[in-house]
Image 1 (cartoon, rainbow, N blue to C red):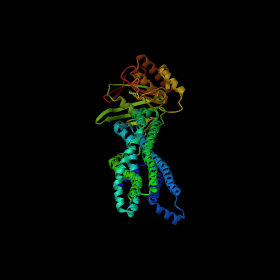
Image 2: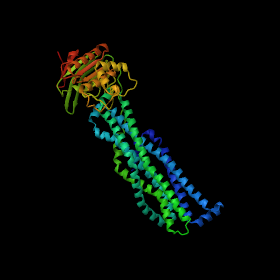
Image 3: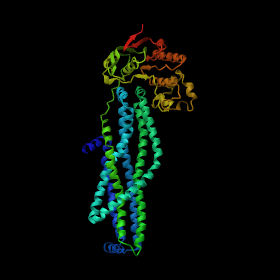
Image 4: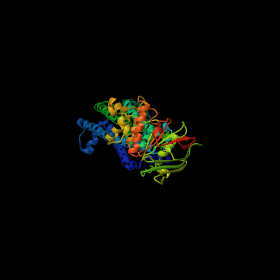
Length: 560
């Protein structure tokens, strides 16, 4: 148990740990109010049921004669106290639930940041379904079933311990009987709570789906996000939807707990009416005193028993959540950016293998400003792998990468000067504009419009219902392959890379359009000194290249 509590504490972000003392102060205040309410309630019920005893008490200690008006004042003050107490506790519950769910939000963001800043090699080996569960479900499970359970054990056991001591001293037999009967009453209260929370289900489902969409955008767009340096933008969008989802869950949990508090007010009101009946009645039995005591004590004991029992069950059934999340505890070190490229990127004697199969063997390639290099080869020869090595996505088994005669260590490889357009364009659920600018603000519309016109997307965008602000669906299956490729190409060109890597990016265009776009790219190599390395099965790309290569059996061979 000690190890479990230590791991639980370590999972709480440091910024949240600083607020834990305030959280427990709120908990003690909550418990204190509960104790005061019991101390205030039980004696009043017992005294009011014996009018003569109440009269002697008021005369001897307060020098006040008992009257019907005084009784009404006492009952009214009791009711007002409970209204005030429950108002304060409702506020406390709201603050505490929001705090605990903010811990869930922080853990989710941490896991998503770890994933999006992780290496491409680790990304390709990750089980996406397991990661989805870990980043979205487990942090909420940790908050609701672990943190809240520990909190309930702390507060409710403390409350019940004090109640039990006082009650047992007063009447051991009555204490035992009361606890047995209150178990039955607690079950009825649980049924009452369950019916009330069903109204939240529809909204929570909608928010869950929105969160899923944002997560899938990141899962499917890993390369495009990194090539456009949009990691923080997508993390922010995920964080916003995740926060709204967690805020709704916090409201739901607060409602479930606060509902009992409001029920107490109604219970006290009914109890007050019953007491008035018996006070003004000439005949009542001692059994009513027992029933009143049981009713008063049940207001606190029912929820406490329920919370303690559920806390033990939740901790036992969700203990593995702490173990899984602890496995993500190690922080991901962001790779050092490389921004020194001015003239040449050179790879020398590069080799790479998947498993025991060597895909790339002793490859040498020099990429200079203004180059247009084409690489052809059969499927499975390693052309995409070679582009990934050039982009910094994969670390070669051996060989060196040099930029302007500066050799790079492997942890410095990154996308800062490289743009990458893959053979399977990534389109996420956002507008056409957002897909082209990857959620970046302060859009350079002049630059973007020139790209759109050059790629012949202008008329298509005009035909859309909302123009460039028209939303696209994930992967946008209604778009043609050529449209997707041109949107992806517009995106990578918008971010003005110094080296542009193209992986079969024109293979779904008609011949005339392909030639026009390749001619536009060729102009960029001349006018802007953009370096292009294009992989293609066809011969069309080679017609625009100043150097042509073929990748065969892992070897890069220059075409003569």
